[in-house]
Image 1 (cartoon, rainbow, N blue to C red):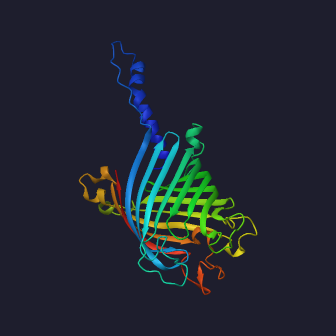
Image 2: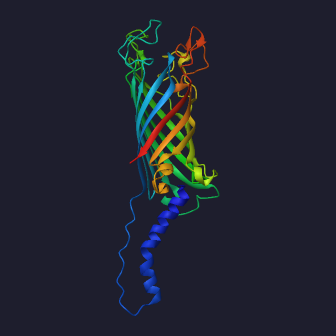
Length: 352
């Protein structure tokens, strides 16, 4: 549902609440009229909670030359209230043995490591918006396909029990431009400020750097502030024949600018300088199983979805996939295909 349609729905609720009293006054009825109760307008116009199980078939982990299968368990929340939206997702990704958990030797050396448990990664993301049309009680920011402009803020957090021992935290802030698409669709564009803090075991004194190593002895890093551009879209395939209108397409993409070395200039080798990162799921095809198979299915649309997607993640974590001197993305001068991920992804999502 677009911002414009959501705003109209909210206005309709308000009009429905005041209509009985207005009508009685205009008719100037000479008899006593029992007033109808005013309808309560809900705080959340939309309040969706979803659980997902998915499998990513050929995921990569920088420096690990074998592809890994990841099982993903996720919880997602989305709500729409009078002034904006909130989106929260929490996920746990469990790798197979190709991406080992730590401690289990060093998977970045030439020594084979067998029988290790796969790494487990926790990731959380929050994005919140405040719509200008709602804040300023106007429709001036709805022009043609543009449905609204919003302030947007958010945070991310990630940790994994891998040798690298990442502990990512970042904040974003900026604007979101929301556009309507046909067939109940939308397209959101958000230019943002981005600031990241992380941890890297390779930057600990005594690991690959001599000890003591000033400034970054514990491996914690603060990257330079940079820019980000986040895109999201969704559209039902309403042009299909009525009998098979159970499909939708969606996708997302995040572009994150170079964020420096993660430490003071001159301490880390320039070979570790980061490049623009593209973290995307450009296409997801969703089958609305609850609408297709449940009696009166339109009422239960998207209560149970099956989907398949393609994931593309270039320069993972900012690592330069095109620099042959990069010892993580290249092995013996040959690209080991670990810093750019190209993978099919499939899963099932249920609303509750």
